[in-house]
Amino acid sequence: MTTTLDRALVPKLDDADLTLMLEIRAFELKLLDLFSQGLLNGTTHTCLGQEYVPVALRPLLTPGDHVFSNHRGHGHYLARFGDLEGLLAEIMGREGAVCAGVGGSQHIRRDGYLSTGVQGESLPVAAGVALHLARAGSGALALVYIGDGTFGEGAVYEALNIIALWRLPVLVVVENNGIAQSTPIAANLAGTIAGRAAAFGIGHHLVEGFDLPAIRTALEPLIARVRQGEPLIAEFATHRIGPHSKGDDTRPPEVLSELRDWRALYAAAHPEQSERLDQAARARVEAVAADVIARPPSRWAGP
Amino acid sequence: MRVAENLNSALHTLMDTRQDLYLLGEDVLDPYGGAFKVTRGLSTRHPGRVLTTPISESAITGVAAGLALCGDSAIVEIMFGDFAALAFDQLLNFASKSVSMYGSRVPMRMIVRCPVGGGRGYGPTHSQSLQKHFVGIPGLALYEMSHLHDNLAVLEEMLAREEPCILFEDKVLYTRPMHAVRPPFTVENTGGVARVSLDTRPDCVIVAPGGMAHRALAAMYSLLMEEEISCTLLVPSRLYPFDVDVPAAPHVFVVEESTAGGTWGAEVAHAVHRRHWDRLAGPVTLVHSADSVIPTAAHLEREVVVDETVIHRVIREVIRG
Ligand SMILES: Cc1ncc(C[n+]2csc(CCOP(=O)(O)OP(=O)(O)O)c2C)c(N)n1
Image (cartoon, rainbow over all chains, first blue to last red):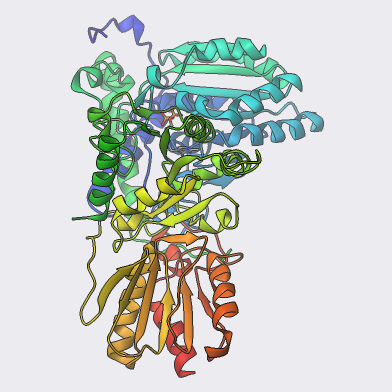
């Protein structure tokens, strides 16, 4: 892929969107940094390279919508709540943790938001939530984030069938980064995601690039239809530019150099705005980290 | 040699010597070599028989059963044992049943490897000890990796059973050295049971699976030094069917990482009660983790998961009152 830039291909983002994307980036980099300093234990999956996906969807959601996230969920959470402190405290097991430090990076629940670390499990659950929402007639939907690799799980297909049969308001957002842990999509997925959607009679929309206004314009009418019971698979062609977890990226250099990082592309096209907002984002994340690290351990009332 | 290296070399030997053996699992190809690096080097040597799979635990367990039906052998690596839940139907209703439900014995050589256990901060869905959920299924044998058992012999034994087997592998063992036992204790291994003891008559016997052995050993050491309580530890390689000769001692403890309720230890205790009721000073004591999910944060996880301090305290309380 070429790195020469056509400014027109990188339309200017609004300050609020870019700030959120940069804060998510700074947050994820800070996590990797804390890990390397031995200040975090356990595991974590950063969404480096994919930060814009939940930010693009953010204004298309209503407070009544339910978001189902997965192992790579920090961006999903931050785009919904902007709560850097609560998430970092959860990951570090400190006071103020969203789930008392019990769930950690990949098991988080907060009003209208839930994540779990078992692949594919959330799709049927989202169908159940959508069934409830449909009956309540509120026009709310259930959004499920899954990766391309998660199409390996049978539960995904059982759920898609039910979602289509019962016309449930489910929006499946596939973050297709072409890789699952260490396995490239070519070794994981026969056929295509679009083909799968077609097989169930579910609409499919491919999103390329990170032109947020354009993405929203295209998705808005489709999501309005989801709310009426016309489920949709929105497939974002994206890039995981970091490791799967930490220090476990075994992709060869020629593959890594092909990856497109929205941040580098954007910074090259709009250096002044990027620099200004990036500094602010990193400063905010640093302040949050300093605050959270100094907190006492989280307390849990018990099972 | 570390336990993971011992297991890796056992897998290498098996793949080298058995041309009908397959290994299936997620992300098992080099250079990644599996999430815990146990399959390192295997795909390079045996590209046709070491297969990386989609994220499909149920399907790959079924594929292994299909290979086994044809007389081949198969080892499945489940990345985190917790996801063996997705393969439960294949194991319960197909693979183990097939051994006998067609009226004559069908040999099924397949092993499902499950990294289990907490202590690494992976959280509630990546830290469980699932052994108890598989106890009591006819045609399914359960084994647990330990630093006191050579993995090659264990894997050979499983394949020789000609029925599906699960090998539980406590993740914290991977980086531990093989065979180490702290003096004055000595170890002897007979019939798949490692016995760690002193040459005196023990005050109690501890039965523990491999993943618990280090914690049990640490407690035995502190009990000896601080309380002059002497323990004999039995670490069976095969957990189920359980068939271990428990030496004469007034007290027996079964220690495992599983959370409370329907535990493997309860099964062991029942067997010991039936066989040795008249020579016990009291019922077998079960030591296990709390009745709880396994929290992610280290300070909370420590409150739930059994460690050497808990083992030490329980044994002292039972013996000293
Ligand atoms: C049932 C299950 N199997 C395996 C895993 C281990 N695992 C965690 S993330 C992952 C890869 C997921 O790939 P993909 O769906 O493409 O999402 P990405 O990581 O690329 O965001 C795997 C195999 C899991 N969490 N759950």
